[in-house]
Amino acid sequence: MKKGIHPNYREICFQDMSNGFKFVTRSCASTKEMITLEDGRELPLYKLDTTSESHPFYTGTQKSVDNMGGRVERFRNRFGKTAAK
Image 1 (tube, rainbow, N blue to C red):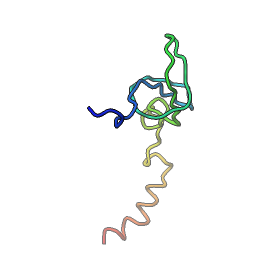
Image 2: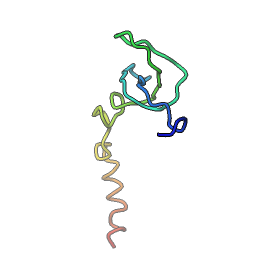
Image 3: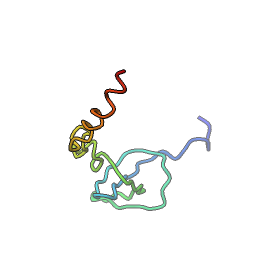
Image 4: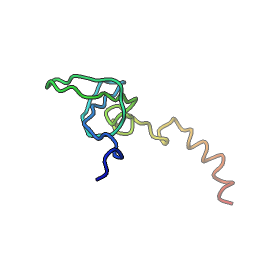
């Protein structure tokens, strides 16, 4: 392998800023902050806006379009007949 052409691939702690969820994985993302974990390791910290712990699709709190108080049915009644012709 050539030296100096590969990214810095190392363990990084990713933290969800909406709920504080943290997970450690390997990445080459560049960071400026460090964090000390419960086990004593000091790792680079990469802050995220959303993860699978806070995203509505993965948490089951996403609202379905069909459950929006009849708006979909009103739309289908109004415009469904013209689309079928």
